[in-house]
Length: 350
Ligand SMILES: [Mg+2]
Image 1 (tube, rainbow, N blue to C red):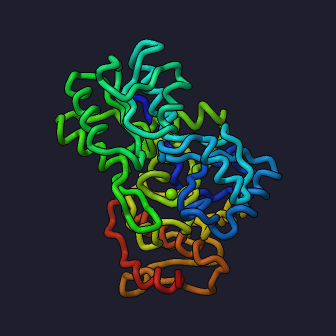
Image 2 (cartoon, protein in one colour):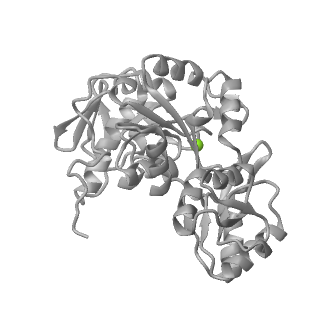
């Protein structure tokens, strides 16, 4: 196919952004864990920032790869934390997976569900009938995370996949964070069925296009901004969907992951936390000879070839990181060696 993406990559530095993000975009597609909450508690500043963005007219939607909980349960959790949310504001990978299932099999068919209530409800919403056994003649298998899944369910899925039924996975995140540590995620349970059958599932969740499609269908967003904490789900999902993204540093990503990030992992904007949604993002200016300025920070190559900050310091160290990334990304994109950046990053004190 010869169709080209637009010339301006969504990850290109923006130089003419004059509005705060919550006014520049109509809808925020927000990741949950590491962005709005961490485990049971809200992340600092999240509740106030989301309130202010909503009051100013921004539509807020919550997008999760976790297929276990229903939108009602997620909305109730958010509301309990002080973030007013309705079930219709929550989009799950279960919904994206169920839409794929419905496109593959006749209306009203039975579907073998290996997962939780969130996945069963999403299957019912598409007019399909969730079943738990191959003996009930399912026409497809759909698999999503649930903490109660054990060998009998994985074996049932394997038998169905061996019969040649379409197999759709809500997501393939290998791990899931819990209060006691890192535990096997849906991707690890999917791997058991893949190993047993030699078959690859079709996958719905972030960073793949079905999840982004589901959010756009459900929110009607015209100009969405993806907000997330992970490069390989949230930011890559925005890249694959061709939309802009804001990375916040309240979750799993560390600043040192950014200077040499591949284009698909590069966010459009950076912020410490969700207050970044209310801010005018500092413009990135190219000064020539590999030097860039952002938010009062100027980064340039020193005599020894290393990057360093020259002149005054800006107020927001994440603007300095944005300037640093502009320098390393432009070198990488031009096929030049990426200048040494670790010392410059250390100067930011992040
Ligand atoms: Mg997250």
